Picture 1 (cartoon, rainbow, N blue to C red):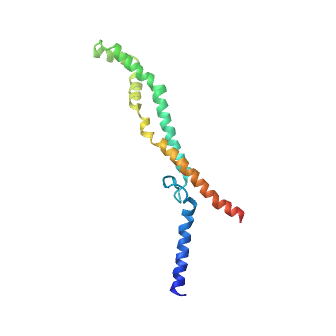
Picture 2 (picture 1 turned 45 degrees about the vertical axis):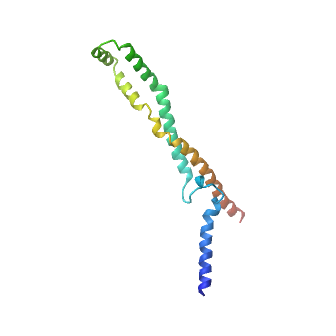
Picture 3 (picture 1 turned 90 degrees about the vertical axis):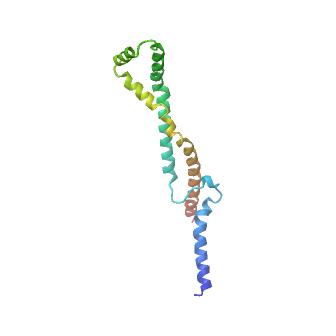
Length: 145
């Protein structure tokens, strides 16, 4: 074989390799272009679970723990004229109320840690749409042949 034949064969095989992955997603804008070898079902599921945790912490804070914190603020205003030692004794009588109030104060704003999962979920669903659309094309071509 001549060197021209070998170089044209190499160029053709490298062109085939380059066209295969990019031809499927070449029409997709780059921020949402799927990368080969990544399962976007898994990625979307993980972002969905992070979003669910954010929603759970938000609901926990606003629906369940908010009355504890509101009650704590109300008692502080009512007992502001009472001596601190008397207020401490009355809180201990409640039987574990301090622990729940401390837990409520600690959980306050915890959902902000998981909030970045929400836009990432929307991004991954868009990428997953293009990924599924691109992976359907080769399976349809195989069915036709």
